[in-house]
Image (cartoon, rainbow, N blue to C red):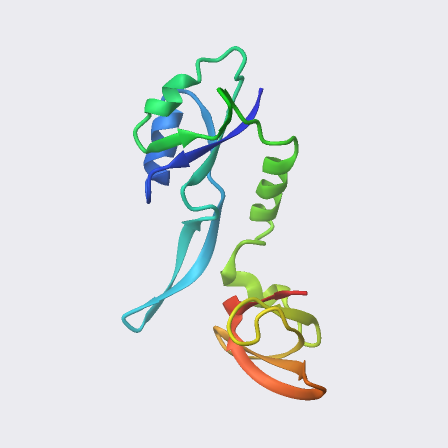
Length: 165
């Protein structure tokens, strides 16, 4: 018995989870919360952590797993040859623990970052540079002090573009 990875059709994660549960499978869809801005409105939305992928728990040796392939919302089961590929022990449990701890939530990213801590810029012109978090500018922007060509430069970046270094 173990966890296996299932690929869903685009935006069909919820349908796939519902249909797999109806068939009696244990299913886990890791999710994250993030801020979405649209038409001058900002709201907190829940999205899959791994778009188009979810985990299913079953015994590949004893259970009939082929019905998973014809489940509405499912595109494929990740396999190695003809057999489903089992997820290494502890991986799904670690993801669950991190999800419960809020590590995937942009909504509480500010609470995890403290002024003076080193942060890595994830994208944009300063991608992969490590700097020092200075302060929160607004709900979604932070001030970061970077060392560029021997000079200290203060820049403002989106909160979603920084991560603990």
